[in-house]
Structures are given as C-alpha cells and as structure tokens.
Length: 277
Figure 1 (cartoon, rainbow, N blue to C red):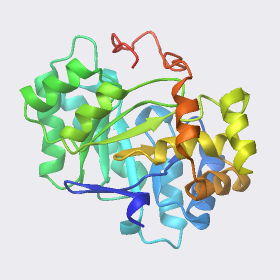
Figure 2: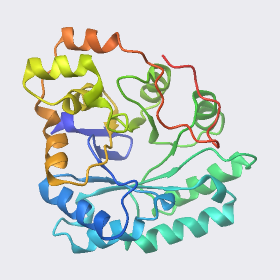
Figure 3: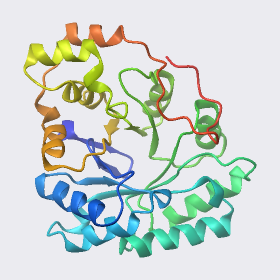
Figure 4: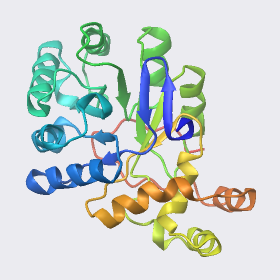
C-alpha cells in the first residue's frame, strides 16, 4: 500500500481521492457512498461546493469507520478574516457531521486579506486538533514560499491544477523539499484526457484507457495525489484501477513532449500564476 498513500509529517493521505465538485445533494451523497464501497478512502470537498452536508450524510451512512477516511475541505477566499474563517470552519464540521477534518485548506488566496492573520487562524485549527493537517490551494510559488518559509506555517499540502498538459515542476520541487503533498485537481483536464492523441496511443499500447494513463502519470510521482471527479461506479472503478497501469520510459518521454501551459481553471479572482514548467 506504500505507493498508494502519501505519508509525511502527520499526513496519511491516499494518493487517489474522489473530487466532488460540482455534485450536490443526493447525487453527491450517492457518489461518495459508492466510492467508499468500491475502495476509495479519500474524499475532497469545500464550503464553496455547497456539498459538505451531502458528503457528511455519506460519512454517517457508510460502513467504513470515519477514522479510515481522509476528508479534505476548504474555506473560500472571501472568508479569510479570522472571525469569518472560524465561522466557516465551524459550519464545515457541522455539515460533515465530524469532529475534525483530516486536511483543511485555504481555497484561494484572498485579495486584500491580512494573510498573516489568516494563516495564524488556520494554524489554530490544527493546534486545536480539529484540523489534523492544514494547507493551501491555488497559491503560486512566491506566496507559498512566504507562508511556509516566511511565516513558518506547518503546511502539509498544496492543492493546484496539475495534469499532463499543465506543468508544476517548481511548485512540486518546493513541496517535496518541505515534506508537503501536492494534490492535483482537474487531473483529467475536465474530461479532455481522452482527446489527446498521445494518451490514446499510450493507452492502446497497454490496453487501458487514456484517463488511466493520465492518472497513473500523476500517481507515479512521489508526493503527488489526484482527485478526479467521478459519479458513476464504472468511472470510479476505472480511476481506482489506474494503479495497475505500468507506464514505461517511452510513455513518459511522449507525455513530456505535450504542452505544459494548458490551464483549464482560471477564474477572475485567481492569483498571478507561476510560469508553467
């Protein structure tokens, strides 16, 4: 199991998780229950997804003990003032029907927020034991460096968009140097993986799916986790089976030739992104 779990600091996070955005309500609860049934032990949610309550229902209804499930959630960028953060975090725990989250992230860097106070509040959640680990999402490298090296925040993870057509080499190197996990969201490029001829060629060579090639490329990398959204049992099982794919040097060399600047998530409130590498 060592190659399917990231263990660093206090983190014990399965490398493959279930992304839940944009599922809500019964669809989300059903998808999470089903994922736990087929073998997932890592679920990603956020206050902004408006589905923490649906995830919480699944956590209560499943036969899998809560302590066996890694749950990540996040606070939205407009709730980073300390009082707002505390209220949002309380709401998250209430919705999840859990006394703690395994990983709690700042979802996006807030414009004009007092970052030092936000990070101090985030750290307090960890000190209270209500967040087993803390981290950030969508922070470019200079800002991440400021938080980790400048402020000394004990971050366990960074979550960013990362896939075969978007490079994150510098961010990943920094994460490894500081014993942090890097969680890749949109790892299948918003369902575009099967349209990439190079992935199709590799998949045909191994008798697997292009999506499985894209996921295995990420999962083979030390400290990297991936959280593809999947609602059907077929897709959830397929993603889980990505661990069985064996990529060779020729496959990796072909993937290396793909452009590394194809970002699929960049809202108007996004920070100034790092140059792709």
